[in-house]
Length: 404
Image (cartoon, rainbow, N blue to C red):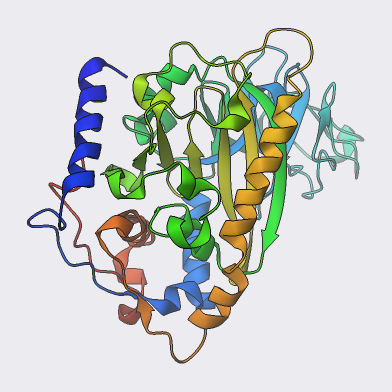
């Protein structure tokens, strides 16, 4: 992050602290229809036109370190096999044999020499080519070159590997816009994998995702944790095209450091913004990452049904070289889980409320504009014409409120 960007962001936080009203010209945000959180048909539109056509985080390079190492990604309902080839290249394929659809791997992760269908023995190379099959004599004029595994788009930001089921999708780094440039200071090509775990929550995925797109709730939910050191009134929000965004919240004291990170290895190239504030990036549609010089989590929000979801948390650390990772990470993750419990405590009850006859929709303020930005992008991806009129959001946030 260059000096001009640092100064611009610091100035923006000062402006937010000192303002007495939303900036002149900012539009009143219309109510978001409550049916978007409850309607099974709307859930299906999301799945078909957004989840199945978005860049989604799959795994870290450390999780598939060697040729033949694989990770099985199943978050969209389609089993996607992410595998490192003998040439070191990471590729993705549907975990679906071209013969009769049986799986090539059954475990969530592991290591193989080749990809063999357990049902009838069709064998594929790690690059997806069909290499051999049983009783070839009984297949009339079968050309093996016409039966490779079906590929899935697979691209990386540093050591972070993403997949996209849309073969015509914009390239990942182009799709992310300026985010890779902003994150260069934390060395994405060097960060190491630490931990992955999931937490089930009984609510629509958007109920919980909304909470991580604003800090308006800090004084109510996090009185004894996050609110003690974050100044939510100074939060600056940058909205970017394609639904991405940055929420930058200053510390209450410039010299404050999270006690849970003391003694941990830190990334020397991190800027003043990252060292002394709290930047949180949104990779649309479901990845939130609060960045720190000592490492960062990916918070991944996955729908498992119209009224249930999982939040998956993957942790990454600065490269620690050889040997074992610092035992301080166990404490840090435990501390985070306490905060996560605060965020999830009301989610099932909120889901009950949004399904009640009393609920009319979601009324947002200027601090919560990231939520509205997220919903605008959702309608664009689904296609407004496909959405029933009573479930649409109005496209009211545009230039100059979206940067880039």
